[in-house]
Every structure is written in C-alpha cells, then in structure tokens.
Length: 166
Image (cartoon, rainbow, N blue to C red):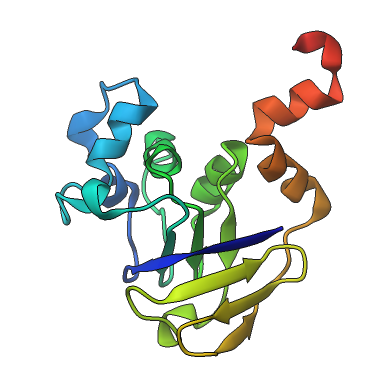
C-alpha cells in the first residue's frame, strides 16, 4: 500500500481543539465538519487541501480530548495520512478506526517542508520525500491495521469478517 501526497506541516502539541474547534461539535455531518478543520489557525485550510495530502507534525499530535470529530474532519477533507513524531494514543486509535493512516516517524519535521511530496510505503515502513530525495524509515503498520485501512475503517472491516452483517 503506497500513498503519495503533498505535505501540510504543523508543529508540536497540536491538540484536538486546534484540529477541530469545540464550537463546532454540534455539527454531525462529516462533510460539513471538514470545512472546519484547523479553522482556528488556518480558516481557509479546507479550501487549499487536495485529496491525498499528508499532514506532518511534531510530537504529541492529537493530544487533548478524545473527540472523534478531530479525525473525521480530516478524513472527509481528503487527507491521505498523518505522519508525526508521536501521536496521542486515543487519536491514533480513532484515526485507524475511521481508516485514516497514522504513521509515527521520529524526526520527520526535520526532513520535510510545506508543499513537499511524500511517498509512504505502509507495508515496508519506508518514506520518501520526493521533493528532496530524503528517505526515512518508520515502523510498518501491522497487517491487521492495514486491513482496517484498506476496508475504509473498523466498521467496514468487521463487515468483511462477517458477511451476514452487511
């Protein structure tokens, strides 16, 4: 499984309120949620993202509350993956549950800039910055997580495991 996309680079401690501001929590339509991704720091972010773009961040991405909206808004915006130096555990699990690849890659922020093109090889754990030629290694995603991502999330994956529940 190979993903390619343009980088949107963020810093450290990007919490769920920065990703999806709490004042929009009453919105239930994920497509509408996408319009408010990073709205507090980058109001036009949703207008600039193209499908497959990749978020790169420093340590502790997704810290804060366990709000699933902070993952859903990015997935429905078309973000192809999140690559960070570390990802808050609940955010990581929420991302996998909705089928959004979450990659932990130490020192990633030192090797990418906004607009770079990354190629992620999820099975082998290889990352190539196609803009600079830099290659990095990350821990490959285990087969069961790859299956969840390929299925589009945990619920669709479970339906493939038990076809009578479709």
